[in-house]
Figure 1 (spheres, rainbow, N blue to C red):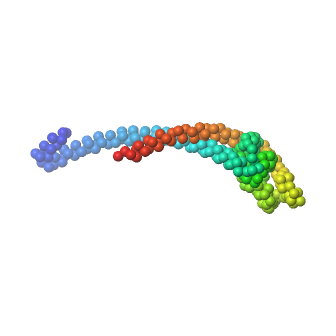
Figure 2 (figure 1 turned 180 degrees about the vertical axis):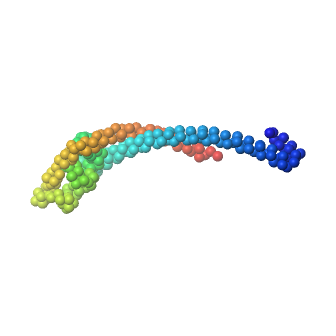
Figure 3 (figure 1 turned 30 degrees about the horizontal axis):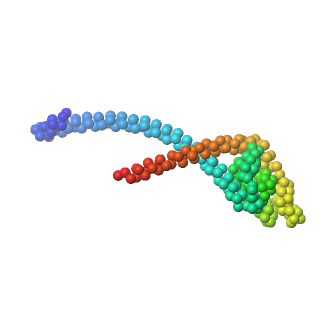
Length: 254
């Protein structure tokens, strides 16, 4: 019924008739509105479902890239720490990080430790005024110590470093006994011997077990993730400029 007809009834007809006519108009309007709401809701639900699926896929992808980028950043940080130790240690004057990195990569293939963790351990040993040769000799034994006593490589390096600087008690509290006679004249040889006698070869033995092989495989796959992450970091950095510019433009809008 047209609006003018309804108004005409309101003006000319009795109240009961007007009420009946308006009730019909109201019922029809509510029915049509209900159909519209139902269609809109169905369409909205379909968009929501698709949006959730796309958001979930995008979220998983972004989380994966973020973790890969983190792995790449951790590798860069380990190398940065190593280079800093080399630069600040007179005993490492002229030393190259390449020899340490090659040893770390080789150890990742036979122990459960990642090359990044080994590099961080080498950087810690370098703060104890050791030469490049001494660090490369100690590195596998520090890994043995960490593996056998179930501590992280950095802590193991700190303990060994303290022993190299004259504090043998730190290792002694872990029942790693150092020959005091030899230690008094040759700390390096005494510590090396004590580490061999207490944990020598343990890291590679652990790496040869089934669980160790699984861990080694995971670590090697992690190198692939680091490569992907490095690309992700570059891509994110490239995108950051335009995104910030767009954000600034929106903020300036009324």
